[in-house]
Length: 189
Length: 86
Image (tube, rainbow over all chains, first blue to last red; front, side, top):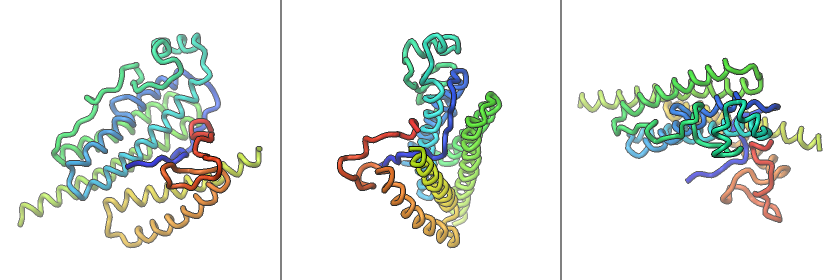
């Protein structure tokens, strides 16, 4: 069961129309290392992961949906006032032709989201290693996105998200150690 | 109108800050379940959160759906602004 809270996790301030940046931000909306992929990956792995780690996957998976909402808010605000001509000039013509001003789960190059981006191996070490890698890749993407804009408000929200990836990676590393310790214990006794 | 917005921003900011502390403690405790001090801090902030939410909802309407927030008359959940409209 999930419930919705009518607020963002962290403020998103957008004062202008910037289609170029909106297109780049799609990478974290519907891209391979984006927030949708992260949320779906962790919540799906919960069913077969050792008991000790189910809470962590549930909580981080849930937080990723809050991040997805922040990215959606940025894209929505950056594009909502754009004219078709501005969309075309910014390389968003193909998006506009299919979706108007609607958001779509696609990456920065316009490739639609696919479940093939995420894995569920059923092996706890393999799954947690993938989760750590996913967080590191998302952190790197946020850094590139921060480097691509001089809008300090957008940078502020992106820096918050970048820091969250670092914390998640740390927690997944701790979870991996917990699982490895358990495996060792099982071998000894 | 302006005053209301300022007050809304202020309360929302406080709530976001408390929620951030709770989220961080929650994730930390998921991998450090025996840290009694962190559990105490978590419960303390959870209590503080209840008061903030009550204050916020009194002024700006229900924060959560499905019965986790009470509704005034008439039904207020549909009222904006939604988070991406603020």
